[in-house]
Image (cartoon, rainbow, N blue to C red; front, side, top):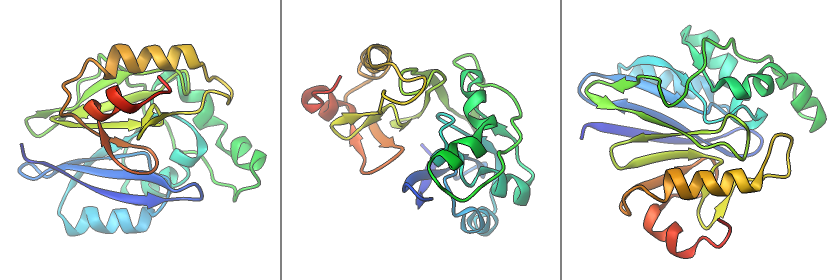
Amino acid sequence: MSVKFKRYITGPIQVNTYLVYDDDSREAIVIDVGGESLRIAKDISDLNLNLKGIYNTHGHFDHVFGAKELQDITGCAFYVNKNDFIFVENLLSQLNLYGLEPKNPPKITESIDENTELFLGDNKVKILETPGHTPGGICFLVGDMLFSGDTLFLESIGRTDLPGGNYQLLSSSIREKLFVLPDNINVFPGHDDATNIAHEKKYNMMV
């Protein structure tokens, strides 16, 4: 498979932002822009990539913090599940609540869900709806790589004590959508270190 990615640790809460691209077609997406927009835009230019858009796993402020800046630089589209539109649209309120620098939200292009067709060259990017951390939480699966946002972490899961969170729903999402994937699927979460499905099925006590 010709899909590659670069990880950036971005923003005030150290979000994992991913630039994912097909080495043959040069088509690319960015997942969860927490910051470092200038650096990401430069890499897109230096790698001669065609950016198809910013695709968000969910709408929490730390994953949207740098999205408008990258959107302004590149003119790209911004996609998130409709159930998280409210979080993106209320970015300023979220930032104010945590005493963080104000940022305007990106312009939402349209909603994405499991019926959305997304390809990087000939490589299908499968969208999995995994609500629980937020109502509109999703993951992106391409080849043996799962970009899990704040749904699944190394021996942990996303918080469910924030507005819109639901532990039972998140646990069901992980068991029914992620733990049915092959054991060799590598998991690249929205924070901290990578893991894989086999490890999480054996050692994740929070699901």
